Length: 481
Image (tube, rainbow, N blue to C red; front, side, top):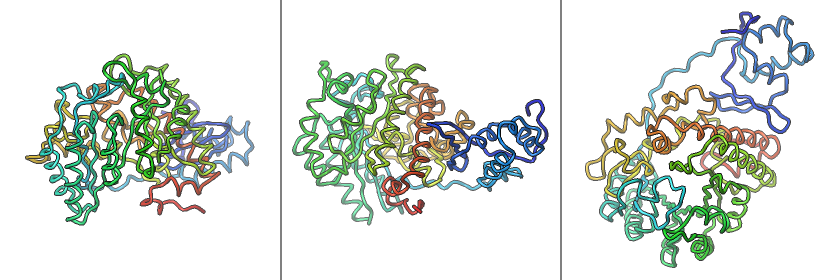
């Protein structure tokens, strides 16, 4: 419904999100995931209803008293040129049937157990709320056989070793790695291998095996000793920083690009910049700093936490920009995934590969949309012995294949950059994978807005940095002029 005084308009606005930061206006064209810089008058025009925009052409508009006629006319022309305003209704795109990719990635939850008792752990210190269990080599090899067959024409397979703490099942992991490498090679495929670990069980044998097999490693490290030991503790309450510190230099040595460090921070340990700087000193190839999302009442985020964490993300974005302008990029997670999407102008239809090209495998061999949902009642999708329940999987794929199929996301301006959020986290928080926590959504919108600002500033001030940011297989979609 038009506001009082509005007239019928031949103008049509695209769906946009405008915001102001550090003296400038920016706009996201939501469906096209394109970013534009705006003048003040262009920003005000986009805030008007179509009828009010029509008044600009007749001269009977308050805006024409604050801006010159030439400024308003030029602004309308610029917005029309950028297709943020149109003279005709937008034509619906032709309906196409989505073709889902082969399953080429498995997250093996090889240890439903952990040697730490981190206070904020979202998977109950590795137990996922059930009994503690370890995956047998037989289950792991059956999962690899499934993956080799199901990946079909894909030229790569990916195994992600997950937990709990996966190195508690190092023998199973070693068997799966060697079996996957042989099987992939015999089929002309490449095996990509990675592990997420707390770093407590590193020793010379494990580090040598990791490097020999070119396994990518993500180590959880929340910052300096004081910060890390607040949350990441052993069962007797001791901090784990010193144990990690003993072996981390040996892992990173001559293996920098394959190692990433991840800090998971809470309102009690919220200095993102300090943790980022500390983690970077270890010399890993990348650093990821994100907020925690614990489901226990003590660690559930509230509005005050959201403000505090949002401020921390803002400070981290300022540091990211400062360093990127010098050609330095070592951070992942908070901003890069969104910046890459903006570079390619490819709307993100889903948050991750869960239930599309990726499945999680529990220690007993059951399939789930991802490893984070292991042992969650109602989410089982088959098992390594009998295969996939395709009726169930196709239900998930239809939901996950298009963020617009998730009702709570349909009117969110960030949906084509976010992709709907983590379904495992939503299931843990609200017992519904399609109902994300509103605090998580707000924090995602804040980090996405910061990412848009970073992208716009880098595009203007140092566009060559995108060739460093973009993965090698997609840099053809961005040309530095």
